[in-house]
Image 1 (cartoon, rainbow, N blue to C red):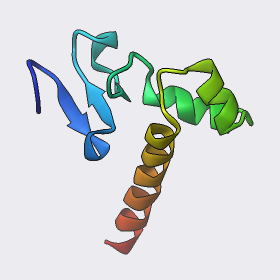
Image 2: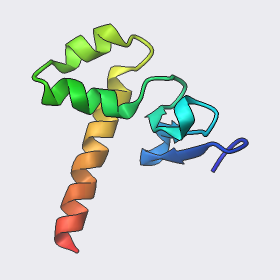
Image 3: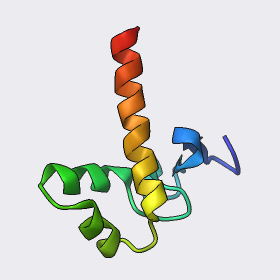
Amino acid sequence: MSGTGTHEAAGGLVSGNPEVLGGKAVFRGTRVPTATLFEYLADGLSLDYFLESFPSVSREQAIGVLRYGQRRIEEELAA
């Protein structure tokens, strides 16, 4: 946890604060929910289109969140 009421996850790529979008997970330093990335990809939209739509999110942040999700799935299956 850092700051007042702010929590971080995914190696600091993601933050959540009750005062920002009701505490939803957002890309750190933005108000863009991480769920939006997954929704875009699930709907068949490209990562580039997501990044063009949300310029406050860096390519490194988006790829980092995707890789974090992949690692978590692999860890869960290995447990």
